[in-house]
Amino acid sequence: MKSLLEFKNVKYFYQTKESEINALEDITFSIYEKDFTSIVGPSGCGKTTILSLTAGLLTASEGEIILNGQPITKNDGRIGYMFQRDHLFEWRSIWQNIILGLEVQKKHKDPEKLAFAEQLLKKYDLYNFKNKKPRQLSGGMRQRVALIRTLVLEPELLLLDEPFSALDFQTRLKVCDDVYDIIKSEQKTALLVTHDISEALSMSDKIIILTKRPAKVKEVVEISFQGQTPLAKREDKEFGKYFEMIWRNLV
Amino acid sequence: MKCKNKNKVISYSKARKQYLKRIKKDKILVLFWQIALFVLFLGVWQLLADNGVIDPFFFSSPSRIVNTIIDLGRDGNLWIHIWTSLYETIIGFIIATILGSFIAILLWWSEKLRRIMEPYLIILNSLPKIALGPMIIFWVGSGTWATVVMCVLICIVITTISMLNAFISCDSDKILLMKSMHANKFQILFKLILPNSIPEFVSVLKINVGMSWVGTIMGEYLSSKAGLGYLINYGSQILKLDIVMASITLLCILAALMYFLVSPLEKKYKR
Image 1 (cartoon, rainbow over the protein chains, first blue to last red):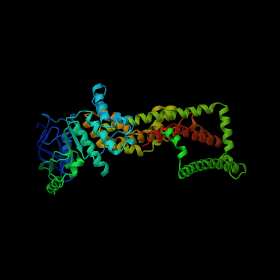
Image 2: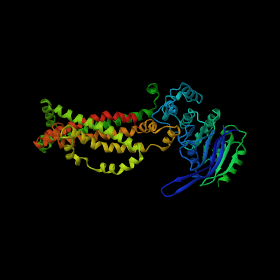
Image 3: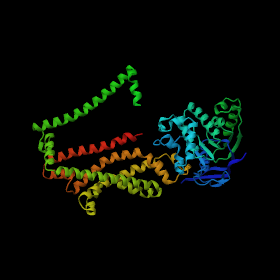
Image 4: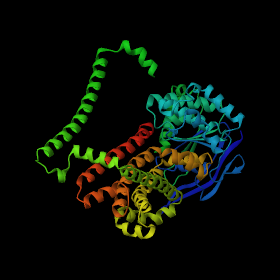
């Protein structure tokens, strides 16, 4: 398999007035194309920092981050970012929200891109809500819209920063399945950051476990289940074993 | 939605009917008392004035106010005064709102500038702008422009501060989202910050309606040859307090009219 994203000896120091905080100490890992990878670690260990570095929102203090053979640049447009909350713009309709990225990149007159956006909406049962405002949609639907908003830009890599943590448990399982289904059927490579071990387990092909700050890669676990959907995986008898192993690595 | 409601009319439950009835009753009750209070206030005032309990020379009375307005209206000058105050207020209101928002955008744009300007904004905000009155007359002369400048001074600082707060309070993840889409600062401003701040902008408009009237009347007190502020000043100098009270009544009506022009916006953009 071809590796899509590579972290090579990446270090990151946060600067504050009081001191320098060593957030990442020597992070090295690879993510393969079309794989779903999760990063888990103790809270405050710098998981989100890794995502920000990957998206080019921060610049590494040392080391290299390579996406598809090219180093990440500032605000790199090749990446799609999904946040804890959907951050749909309330003053825009669903359709206008979805083409926000196209507008920003001045591609909103490109009929091919628009057709792609429309096709995604239809495929994932949101076409009828095209002209609705975000507040008229349920939490799960909103998160789906947020995902499609990033997919429309055809990102090479999808970053998910605890995208389900704002949802209640029932919705969470459902949306988790939905999002997983969309990512797999669009054949996207995804990097998920979460503190929820079972969520990571149910979605990932590979889990990267970090140590507490300053973060290092403690363990990389390859996951394979019989089940296909996240929900089915949760019922797999291997699930508990994996869970325990990761849990032990975390504490 | 409306259509749906129409179809459902028949199927309303008893409890629902009672609930709707109660809401309607409450609404009527509130409106009744609003009107009753107004009538009662005017009635008692008139009665006390007629019976000599209060001296109508100092306290005027509803009938005297109406007569004064009619008299002033007849000689034509009233319209000049109303029009003068009205356009001074509107011009001041528009300039202050636009300029204040523009300054807020500049301060949002540059964090350095914001930090440099912070103490000045605080001082300007706490300074009673009326203190600048004499200087304004020297700078722009007396008359309409002095009043407009006063009006702008009173509204602009609070406009800038409110809008800046609205801009800054935008969710930082939303900004990150825009950045992750490779948006530049202009796009972040026009596609996120400005539309996100519309509810705050509407409340600024509402505040400015009141503030710009304060500015206009203050400006006209200072120096003017026309306007409702001038009329109040004039009335008190020649000891015709009926004129003062008539002007205040007209002011109430004008301010209320302007407020009702702005308030539908609030309903539309309220979150």
